[in-house]
Image (tube, rainbow, N blue to C red):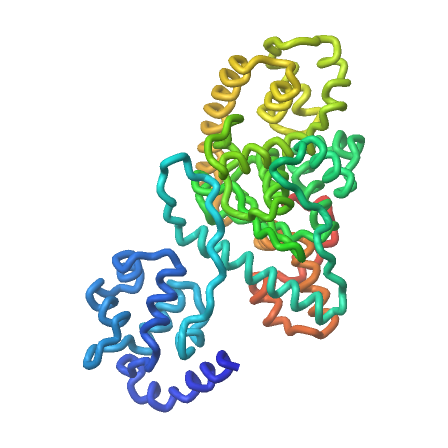
Length: 423
């Protein structure tokens, strides 16, 4: 109702604006400008630069003191674009309530809370909005939304949690062994999560150094977001890591690559637990120990690179996952693990830099339908298209919910039904 009144107030302005559109001042609560800038993660200086005004002028707008100039309607439209907010929201009587910020699990001991980038903050807002849209559409289509039945606690045995999780996901080892392509395991595991009630989104707009994944640990319709700039197999591990957070009800921002095996803080304990669960889901203990390459080499020792790579291919995981599992199961030494892990991280950093460079060179060449399907996920995309077919929403709503132009809908609708399409 408030939004509707705001729109009515906005529609009441055209007569004035038609006379002098560039000089008509927007009558708004200045608190809305402060709220929009802060939730976008921008400083006064950064925001002013993007708006094309001096920082002192933006400060005047935000303070809203008597006798000071207000932004024009044209300037307010630009602010709405910069802050990624609908124009109508600035005509609300007061700022909307904001959800609690996601917990940051990337901090090292004695390190202050890192400032989240505007890109990451925007992805968090998008994830929450898409979840809200999905819940509304599921209700309109009269489809059930079941609560996640799995829970975990830090005192639980991670291998037991992993075995229970794998059984619930319904992915057997024979199926996993067939995922030999670069994206097969990623798409296969995502499909398993979506079939069990998750929403899985991806983004290429956040720097990989800042975030590999985050989660919204809701019991109904939980959300996992992956960084599409990461290697597909690294994304698989992040997916499982975030699954651990959802079961713990500790959603937040993560970078599983930074997690060591030893913890010093409660946050690090949580991260170590989630990494252990992730590895155990992907590479079950009994299966790894029964593999002939492992069974015929008992004891703690160094492993040939060829064996580690072959095991990684067999389970469709990264070499580091295999290395970590061998260490946890007492089949290698801490010194070997640390030495090999450091080498893998250095190799991975170089490969990731090359991948980012190639992505910059090829920017704009990826088909829009494929990017849209990857970022929105098949489940959410299919739900939006079903709502359109059921005449619950309009084509314009679909464009808004999926973030694409209407001309791309046919290709998206075709691709969403073809699971072999690489995303």
